[in-house]
Length: 138
Image (cartoon, rainbow, N blue to C red; front, side, top):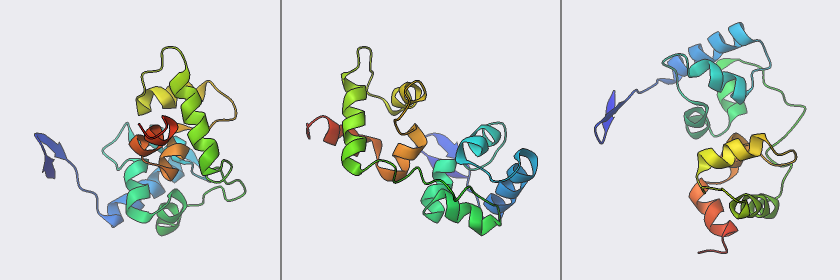
């Protein structure tokens, strides 16, 4: 385990990640979505979808490494242009009660059709960067 500040952070080998993805797919079925895996991994000591995306470059690449099928018929990452995503985050930030946190955005997105989920947004932008752009660079 690595130590970050005073927190101990588990380290995951590529082999462990592949085994965990395969186990999740066996339990949850294929194609395996990042959202389904996220719920599964929260009940175990397994790498988060965000870590998998950072390590392998994308959810699909992580699953391909593990031999797990993903849904390739629908691309959510390019459904919205970068300008669309910035405008959607600006709309969220303007909402009464918006806290401006990523967790609050993710909860807000679940209740709004036609907006990217928190996971989809995170694949495209760092939260601080998109929030800054949506606030006019302030």
